[in-house]
Amino acid sequence: MDDIRLKRLVIVGGGSAGWMTAAALSSLLDSRKIQITLVESEQIGTVGVGEATIPDMINFNRMLGISEVDFMKATDATFKLGIEFANWGRKGDSYFHPFGEHGVDMQGVDFHQYWLLSHQSGSDHPIEDYSLCAAAGKANKFCLPSQNPKSVLSKLRYAYHFNATKYAKFLRFYAEKRGVTRIEGKVETVSVAPESGHIQTLRLDNGTTIEGDFFFDCTGFRSLLMRQTLGVKFEDWRHWLPCNSAQTVACEHTDILPSYTRSTAHSAGWQWRIPTQSRTGNGHVYSTDFMDDDTAHQILMQGLDGAPINEARTIRFKTGCLEKFWYKNCIGIGLSSGFLEPLESTSLYLIQMGISKFISLFPSGALQPVVVAEYNRQMRQQFDQVRDFIILHYCATERNDSPFWNYCRTMAIPDSLEHKIELFREAGRVFRYEDELFSRPSWIAVMLGQNIVPKVCDPIVATLEQAQVDHSLNSMHRAMADAAEKMPTHAAFIGQYCKA
Ligand code: FAD
Image (cartoon, rainbow, N blue to C red; front, side, top):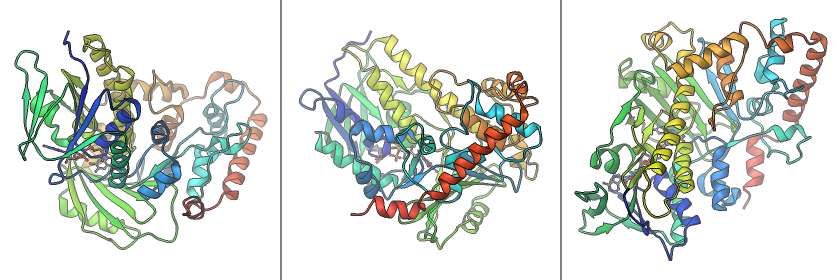
């Protein structure tokens, strides 16, 4: 057992991961008893992408006591009700992965089973017709959810699109106000105690030395402490998630402000469109094994809705994660610990998890192996579950129009994902394991959206009166469509909400 007291916490890196960690720790810990230092290098800079989030982000800001309006103004944020996927299952197909549930479960039976019954009897309504988030998103509408559980508006769930660089600055201000010391400089040498293998000191390019008891590696893809210093191995997932590059560019807004992210599949990857208040972020994610950079650039620029406002930038990445997230007296948080590609906007969520799980296992004095093992178990599970969900988008395709899609369609997938798909195919069953991030509606949206249709519906539902089921579904559809119709446009809502 490694006996150390956590009096000096050192965060290396000042991107979203570093400042989210600093903000969360400073909101909970007494700065007179535990010193928090963050080192960052302006010369190295941050990755500067990460504009779409999932609803858990709301909880993170709430935990910090940040007002939503302040956050939205500071980060250029807009609201996000889900993601529209175009050309994924087949070229020309489109579906919406909404936040929140589809319909309402009835008599203890999952809503989608009623939908399946009706679908099998000839109804051509896609399941997203019973989602309030999809109805509002597709109409570029928005309002905040109702607190009244009887109101259909209580079904709304949302997240944000925002400027991640501005968010890091916003959190820096928050953290410094709560006692975090920021040091500018590039870490050049990391010294490790020969016996324990613990990190002891960092030496910066300006000669400063920083000592610490516990370190957070938030150095992005460099993974300076975890991989480079401590030698923690990286598990490469490129055989399941073959994209390894992205080109990004911002463009001007159109008059409409969408309340959803758009993801359009291309011949060797996909392109995002993410609207913030002042501009639209775009990126083409692709695999250099299947497409060269020039072609990727052309496709990106052809897919813009407005005039570009900067030069496109290329980012290389490797999909996978560390074999250990906590090793010795260091935790990897953010890109230093792994990256699954941006398809379902999960990176900031995984940062949140890395922080909250550390807080829930905060060492009481000595670093207990059981605590470290539990942290690693929980984080690994999070990564594996998110990984499976992202792979689903690639493998559940009928596309055969390019070598990339031929590879994705026929690649071997993890057993855990195979099991989930087979279970759904058999009779539409989906189970959520432990505190899995993506719950039933998400799996259903993507599986149905990409043409995995169960052979039969649940036998319990099959015994119900068809006319009664159709009637319930019709009234739900009407209720969702009416509620969306009455909402203000997203642009009007933001204009009002963020008024000075
Ligand atoms: P970085 O932003 O790279 O920060 C690293 C920090 O470490 C910097 O401050 C740097 O100066 C510092 N540093 C490095 N080395 C040293 C050193 N030697 N000394 C001192 N300081 C050092 N996430 C989402 O949630 N949603 C998205 O839509 C999304 N889209 C993405 C699209 C792409 C193409 C990519 C690549 C990522 C995307 N992400 C997204 C992920 C998201 O960008 C990151 O998870 C997030 O920005 C956190 O990055 P980071 O802080 O780990 O790393």
